[in-house]
Length: 250
Image (cartoon, rainbow, N blue to C red; front, top):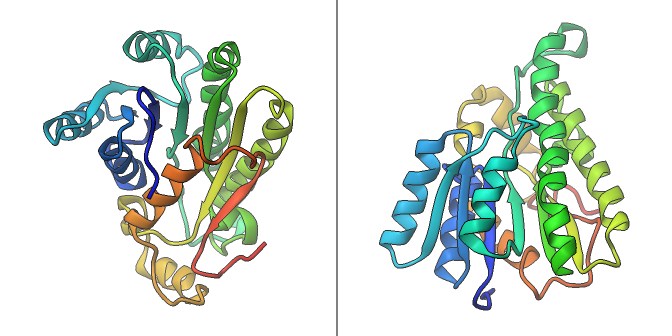
């Protein structure tokens, strides 16, 4: 079981619900101070309050991942924490699905790109100077199995999650000598609000490709995230961890 030293502060983007919420709760229960961030600021603060009520240390802030002027938010985070040890970015959208590529709306593709691809770049740029000063950091971006294998009818999502994997490969090498590790996690279908909003046919298509023939659980994702951003995961960077029930084994 992953536990964290004290102090150890982890910022989680997308903490209002889904994988981010589960990861924040689990890591707070194991000794980390968590900063809950989400475009839904009320949801982030609600998550932080629930964690604090359960005995954990947490704070919540609104963050729009595509905003190129994030300094005020991160300044507040650093005032709260003193040192930010890790960043977990769970923000992501699927965009319109069940479309072949000739049917894809470029405006929708651009929206998905800005959240799924530009967002990870911007938040990494926001925290890396601080982590470099401290000679320590853990950054984890959520990719997707769609970024490895591609999902039919999900062009924008598959392309941008593949972009996250490429981004992490490059960044991992850029900072390999700084004490900072930068990795990705590629889940298959996890029963989150985002997945629940997809057409059932799309979910069935993705689940049928999983050798275990089931969806992943939020707790399974949270456990893996906790280890990847802990001090114990110290010799892996630029890597995309699999969480796919055997769908991708490379």
